[in-house]
Image (cartoon, one colour):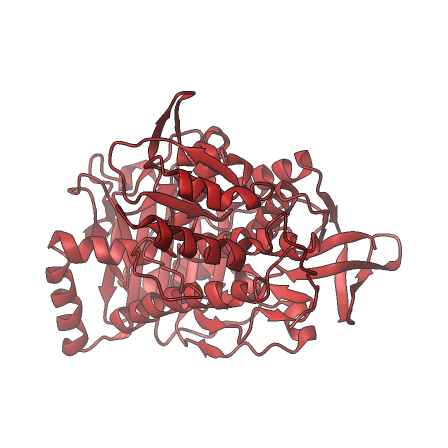
Length: 519
């Protein structure tokens, strides 16, 4: 076989998956139809739980170097045509990274190559087939067509995924009728107001950053860290549009229709026209073919897709590696669909709610938005919505009932003290290895895990605010098991053994054949 895993698509999800697979000792091959790295800006940054995961992999320093500024809590976020304000919170629930997607792809690609990934650009996958043992991709290369084979193939090839279509995986959902026009543009300096960043529009007056709703649609803008403005219009009954590339004139015409005034625009570095979609693949796995990123889901709001897609990849990589290395317990790879389809459905829930908030134009819809903003003036609901946007509220369903509230959640970054000095959960996770963390010096817990020490790292340490006596943390930084403070030794040991079998297979001294059999 040419590789262990073929990854179709070199966007953030595909490149993140490649790096994670390499950390797990798997040989990936990335096939990307575009001959060169994208130079046109797409997303202008990302936020949410993936920011913390990148820190757990030791990548945040590189991200900050690429963006030219430190990662920081987001002072606010758009939600349903409104602007949420986190600036008065001591610890805002959402972290933001102002790193354009093209730079993120370059960073993730460099890391994947450092770890041993092969990336072939200008190689388009035309078809995919599978049998009981392998998957084959038919590729149109720069010189001639060819075939590559692997144990598994992951489609990270976007909303119009050929992999998904070839596998016959339904992609149900809704395409909303509004047309959105987006531009990264400059405006005359005389139009921008120092301090609050308002725009002084001739014949209209000042418009503050964020969303301005009119009877004809929505106008939104914000300052870009690299300079200039990000401007978007949304029209419920737009003028005729087609598949031709959008022009600066088209954006100006749309602004005029929505605002009823002309906005002088200068140079444009990005122009795009799109309609929001709410879609989710019915299944993320079909035998040896899997989906991740935009190939698996589309959300009708901005600022969601990159984070959810990269987290798909982190969840999938170690499970694929376990199957390829022949130690995966039954159902481990299927848990990728179970967990990430659940997470995608949560993201769809909140983004569809945003559609309901932003689409209405009548007095009832305006009343709903005003009431919603009133509720979000209180800290608790504001944090709840912030966590929903970030994806930090996710608790994966565990295979057996658990009374410990931490199971299924993202592991907190505890500061850890031991005889070897001070470290943290984030630093221990740099290698993407599973961890058993004994926080209460309980020998019976360490002894129970000893038969799995070839697959997990066992650490004993103290911490200032102990959330549990012990934590079993998966490579994707989610907690597979936790011992409640003071839990009886026999109960804790039995539950830990069950969790170790469920997630990390047979112990070293037990001979149990592991069969690689796709569902």
